[in-house]
Amino acid sequence: MNTIDTNLYIDLPLFQDKHKWINVEKNSMFSVAINTQTPPIRFTLTYRDLLEKYGYLEPPIDLGLLSNEDYHTSVGGVAKMMLSLINANAFSKSRWVSLGPGYPPSVKMTSTEVHFVDLEAKSLANYTRFKEGLYNEVHGLGKYELVGEEYIAYANYNWLSAQKLLEFYKDTDIYFINDFQQLLVGGIIGPSAPAVLWYHIPFVPENLSKKLREFLIKAFESFDLVILSTKRDLEGLVRTGAKVKVKQIYPFIDPSDYKTVGKKEIQYVEDKYGFKGDDKVVLVVARMDPMKSQDLAISAIKNVDAKLVLAGDGSFTSRTLGHDKGSMWVSRLKELARSLGVQNKVVFTGYVPDDELFALYQRANVVLLPSRIEGFGLAVCEGWVYGKPAVVSSGTGVSELIIEGGNGFVFKSGNVEELAEKLKLALKDEKVGSLGRETVKKCSVNNAVNELREAFDLASEEYKK
Image (cartoon, rainbow, N blue to C red; front, side, top):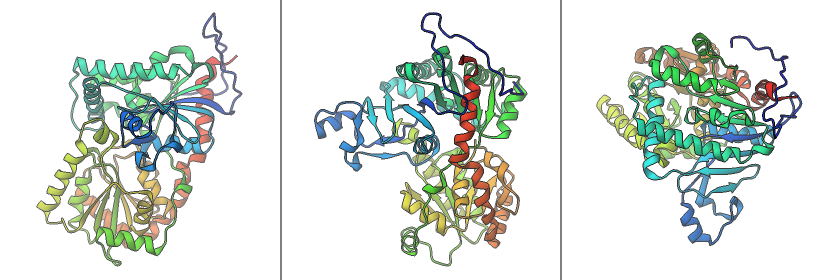
């Protein structure tokens, strides 16, 4: 649906016997059940190990009973966005369902409960292959040939996620489903409560096979509303003629999370990662993944007088689901750096704790997002908090927000020579980044809260009295 009448309300009973209604007023607080593949916390011990360490732990396990070494919170991406919403009191109540192989059944965080779905090893491997195949095709990394048992595993994970979500049916106003790993959940949930999908990866229908394009459209149409991250993706969905309510909202951060650090902390990262006080630093903050195109950054830095810092490690998929694309990609990148003779100009940090990340942002001269295609690119917004100029690929969603020469520069996706030239421009005039502090307001959690309330109102229209 190309246009949306936000004043249209349709009275529609859902069940003749139960008469479940959504009774929230427009723009009021919603009770939500959140669904993401990646959990907001990642355990370093299995549930069995935790029981051996502590004895009986009654679910939902209070994290306050555990040692900090037993788990850590997710550092970025969709999970961090959802945590920002919860911490901003965006919802009257929240429960969260995620994939957690070997994790406890559920845990209690400060402001939410997290419930985990587990899969046996073979099903987990097949699920991972299906969703990675979908992910790779969307990002132009190869066409996916459907394998029946892989799709069955994907469907099974979606079924188990929906089952867990439906346990919260009686006091849930909105099911808030995030990303491509849970595309079937909307159809399974059915009319129990409004289901909103935020599809975070690119949707450029011309880049997809007919089979995958139709699969995505059918999945979108099973939700009461679909959120897309960029105008590019919104226009792509409109071109398909899909019969779905849709809203565009930029991904977001909480700027207050990003602290200013002192000279001591900056000196620490300089010493740790081996660059001098007068070195120019180009910073890429991204997980180790071919989609992030760190290879372009390495190729470009050969012709730029600067150090390249690649901050990040593998994704949840690499570390937890047994699909170790992260370490394989790092090996390829290091070999590329050696072959180009720039190994002394390229720094691989691996996982970076928050305090070090803040120091790296402050120390950087430019923040770079080289991805050939990407849904958005929140690292650019993080750099803007610190007033840093951004250099981004034209294939990234965040390129929509670049004011050329104002808050950054855009280079043609995949063009190493143009990337090198834009890096030189950004390094020449670092004042370019100061405008980014204004731009980032469009991608703040406060702005997102208001946008999401409008989206939830729209999704709930046909469920209201």
